[in-house]
Length: 365
Ligand code: NCD
Ligand code: ZN
Image (cartoon, rainbow, N blue to C red; front, side, top):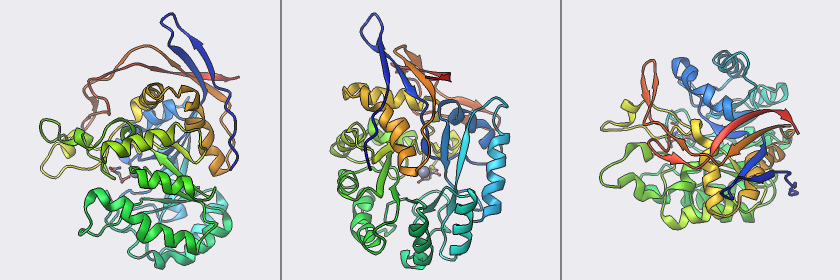
């Protein structure tokens, strides 16, 4: 994969911090949910991003062309009429899914990609794949047609320590999978470990990874700081500091195999603040501000456009967005919570002051 140069524009304010103008970014991993929650959360993703890969882990999961088309209409209906946003739909792979449905869906544009959840790895994954060999006929078709496989890369074996499940997945599943399907386009989703960053870097150009803002921002200590902190709990769970540092290095490297995927995964506050709280962070409202803070801390603001707006579409074989957005070096206060009709959501960075402000821009440069 060639590295495309970015044309990111930079101008400085009085304090010397730049205003950034970037191609409008895309989010290559989102959970937009359904029903009233969809209506409450989708506008946040559509405000910052031109396109988003929409995860299919609804109840029931999105396993057919008809379900993906219906879900796409629901997403569009949940947005303001002037929203400029394209949902890219995915198909949830099960043990029994037919290769024909997946292939036909990809040809029709109903499925941009297919998602592999190992059964019971995370939220709504009970219909996931119990043995990778069961979907080999589907993978055959996907390899042939260049359809990306999006992988939740954790083993589900409870004997394996939760903090090791991603690294063990590489050894037990991923290495063999890519040996059997060497040309398969594969995105290792929301990577959390140095092992995953190395694996992706050393694999061929058909292997890429998404990285979330939260895994770049905090390590596993945040989940236990002064008590148990459910709003920092997600899957894959945050790891040690050395892994966070490896992810920051990968994201800011300028390598076109690492790109933006927020994994925004909203759950109502009451479903997280409970004896068995749900996994997932709601980071859509301030996603670009959060990534910009990381890139600034790493003195790599010049690589933000590659990560957010160039590497993803290049990997997916889609055109780059022509519109531009602006990130101003202005403080933004993140509210403690966001009220929705049925309760409230606690956004990532709740109560913090971020150093950037996102501004949508409409004109192409
Ligand atoms: C996601 C969700 O809630 O749907 N949760 C999460 O912690 N990221 C599922 C997932 O992507 O694992
Ligand atoms: Zn996810």
